[in-house]
Amino acid sequence: MPKCDNCAKGPLYGNNRPWSNKATRRQWHPNIQKIKVIEDGRKVTKRLCTSCIKSLSR
Image (cartoon, rainbow, N blue to C red; front, side, top):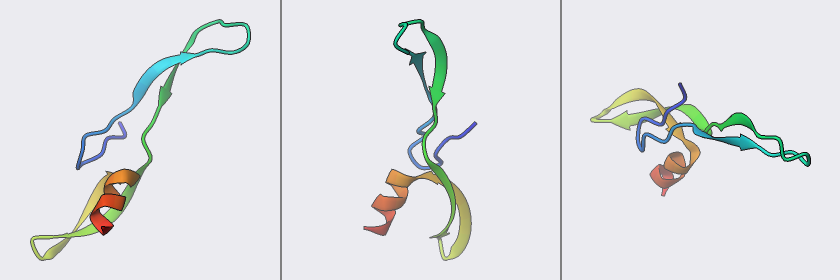
């Protein structure tokens, strides 16, 4: 399951609503990327959402 290691952001659930207004279930996944982060002086691979990656670079 796509989940951010930093903020624990996961998928959201809801309905598709086309013009006929018939509801079918769907998911919205967060934009999860695998990146290498320096943590305690060593490189660690983490799965982070793009908003967390943006906040790390600031």
